[in-house]
Length: 342
Image (cartoon, rainbow, N blue to C red; front, side, top):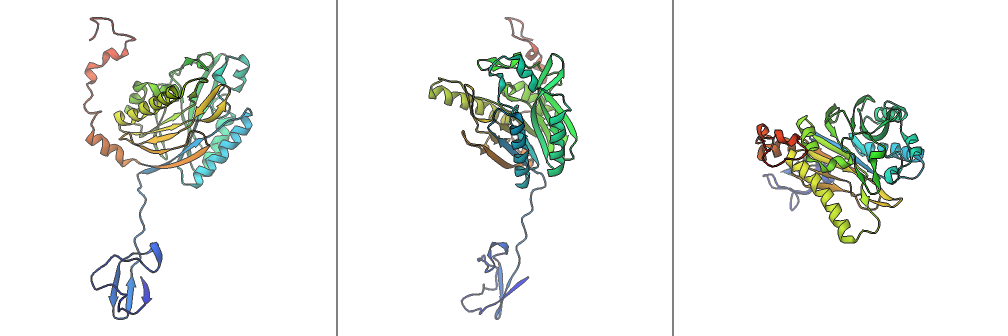
């Protein structure tokens, strides 16, 4: 208890409790009791951090041609996020290099590496040093002729907890990923970490609600999407805005439909003919964007995710309860021909 020697006349609080500003600043309660010439200030109880809150770090970076420089920058930024209290840090898709899938070039397979390998070993040391979980997207060399676009999850103790191989592989103008990546074969998973139950999908997976649903059903509380997406050259402004809006909307829909947090981490800057639009964000289980980066700057976002909101939202919007799982067998079909619906 702190004691201030002041005249009670015109200064001390009346005998009943009154909210007043403490002479000792915001560190102390604004409740004072007057007894004669003494005013007693009771220290305010410190706010307890919600023990069910996970602090997530998003690293939105630009990339240069030298992989070693990008990797060094990423390691520094992981440390910066950890200093801000991040418990889990997610890097953008294929963060070690520029987005090389704009062309089909056999020489670029040299960027691939095994998992475990040099990058996971280095990241494991960083995770252990900073006591932070890391989600990192790598170009995986599985064996000669088989390569994957893979996200690894490294726990805060430096252990490689798991990996996810990108399931949906695009082949669009300047996104020629089918040339490089074999479709994933590890399924949709959740990984138990010191920072909670984490699910990871990668970029093009964002457009498929089935992937988000199955990852949520496996127990994910936070769904991460390492991403590399941007605007094509010579598109008009209206189309650019529409594309970005669609990208953001569908991921917010995943958060709503599954009642979990969605974290999208995009790269930023111009590479080749693409201008990556950044705007990494976090959506809560209600689909609200609670943090968002800029479209043209490197940024570190550190965001608190209250896991209690998952249960709260699912109780009020019981989408998982009301699913008619007995009626969805046809979803396994490529297309439903007339009179074939079961």
